[in-house]
Image 1 (cartoon, rainbow, N blue to C red):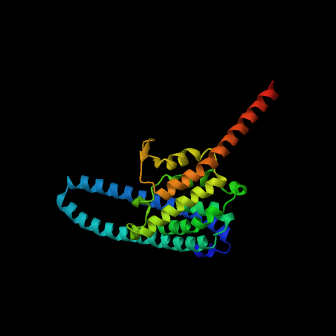
Image 2: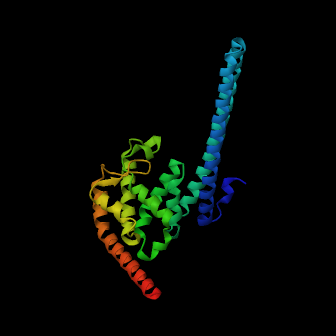
Image 3: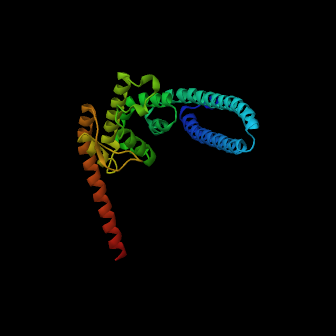
Length: 260
């Protein structure tokens, strides 16, 4: 079934497409691994053959190079066409899902391995996140909160998370700053103890190292707007974190009293 046929309903289609995107990405990774494994096996076989029969090796090498270029071009073309179709479907679905109830799905879209789609999701989230109220806390699960915290842990001027066409774009930097400010505005309403450490570091102009890097604080170029938004968000998180700790202590005391 074509990807485009899965777009009748905005919310359901986006959830379906995100799931499909994850499956397709895993399939593409497997194809690349199989391709690399087969290529390695052929190279090893030809290296062994070269020690036995050099003239045949030269002939085989020519055939191998032709096959390598042909199969490689076909594989790249197939992956590109599939990615292009999924990108168009996701872009259409994201454009139709700019409602507060869909904020969780839009946040999940930030994990899609397609920079233009992630950019579209960011543009949708920038005006949407500040509209969240305390009653909307349940719209964000652990997965969505981790994604938002990861966004806050990435410097807005980190070129590794931009499309090639906007590496040195000031508008791209502006968008990344606006996204982080919007996340912090949302956390004023729906954040809590889990978000407190990251926001505290941001308020001091520091970031927590990303996963895979040493878990140490590192100086980073945190824009003044982001730092100020973190400072404004901090009191809300501290109050909510204290309330959560008090609630947990009361619950433990009640459990111990019941057991005694």
